[in-house]
Image (cartoon, rainbow, N blue to C red; front, top):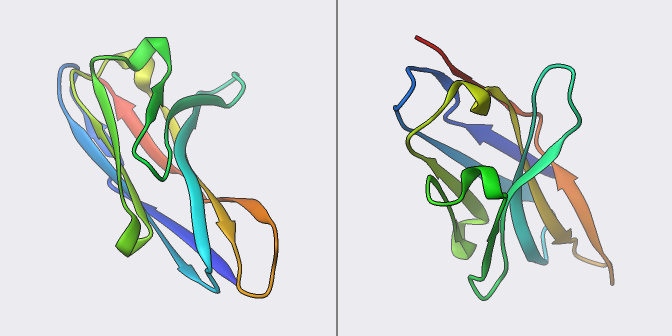
Length: 121
């Protein structure tokens, strides 16, 4: 009864920018950490960035200084601003939110279906 919906992916030239969004809806009591992961063809899914409820952020070394993660807790939404994009950033980007549903004592990982980001000239 929880759904995560991502948006904002697409095709962009090297050096360009994109902004991803991911909103959660459904039976939500509270949300802990939020994050973005990505998976390129033939590779394992990897962490891109996470943000805690207090706003503390963590980034993969490969995106530091180029990507910015943020959240709007009132809207159950996490964002990823991606600047100075490179061809190696091409991947499917997945949203993750740690959600406690109403009636539960546990936080569970919920995932979006993914949004394609392609960086190419």
